[in-house]
Image (cartoon, rainbow, N blue to C red; front, side, top):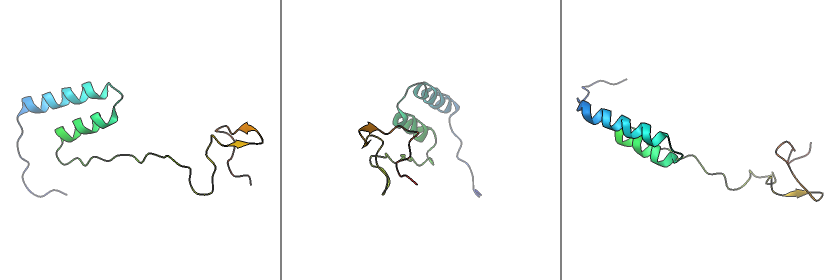
Length: 80
């Protein structure tokens, strides 16, 4: 809930910010998209998704081999 007054913004700056955001969103650089959102919405907190570089504890990476064959994404890393 917000109690207070919203600061008015220059409409031409809002339009320019939306145009930049749309142009940026057409690309594949999510960091640039987040930055464009942050420029447009000052309250926006940039969140970076965690980059998964290692498998969870107890599981093998999909690139590890089992009996000489590479595990596919449909194979279970832990056999039940």
